[in-house]
Length: 310
Image (tube, rainbow, N blue to C red; front, side):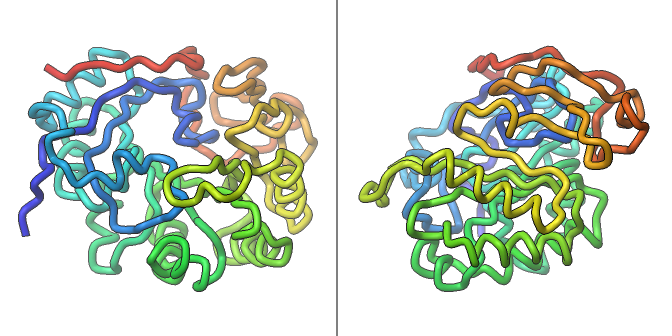
């Protein structure tokens, strides 16, 4: 098999790290984002379908070698490079080589993935990754089969692998789709599984669906549904639960799970108050907040800056 997308991208853009979304990994810092084309799932609700479902290689830009990407990230002041837009497991060889080039320059790597990867490929791929956001699309095999043309179990195995067999910092995203995966019992089962199998400190993001691709027959997710899911997750003991794709500063901010003090204030992708010390401890009570926070918060803000790799 030959990776025909090696060295070719569907575009490069500097984003806030929170857009991945990652709320506990280098907050406020800039990340250089890129992807290729295609996907190993067939989600009817894909929000990046023009890239992930692309078959036309002509939509890919000119050659961008790993060393060029790493150098551009460094020159742009990015703390990390993110493999995103489409799933990086399908361009793993390219992503791994880019990751090695980035690490040579002290730049972190981020994978935005559905976690749908075989056991034999997991270790090599994630050994090159510093942080990941895993899209847990639902919590039933029937949902995965009908809506994504895939299977739930490999994703759960990936999550357990990340938790127990790697040092990768990871967070989970669940796109909440009305009348598809928003059932209270399904949400409860998912949250309980996360707590028991992965631990209470793994951040969970409930994000709003909007009609797209082949699922245009239902409305966008109401904010009240996201907040209900968030409350369910907190009720079973998860420490850091967020809502996304809607404007809700209080449910997008990070709080100390011990004393409730607001640690990182967020308004969309703009950070306000920052109440963590250099070790990631709450300034109010000293409790350690799980994450990889660095020595200080970033100041990139909400900017989105497309760039060209030379």
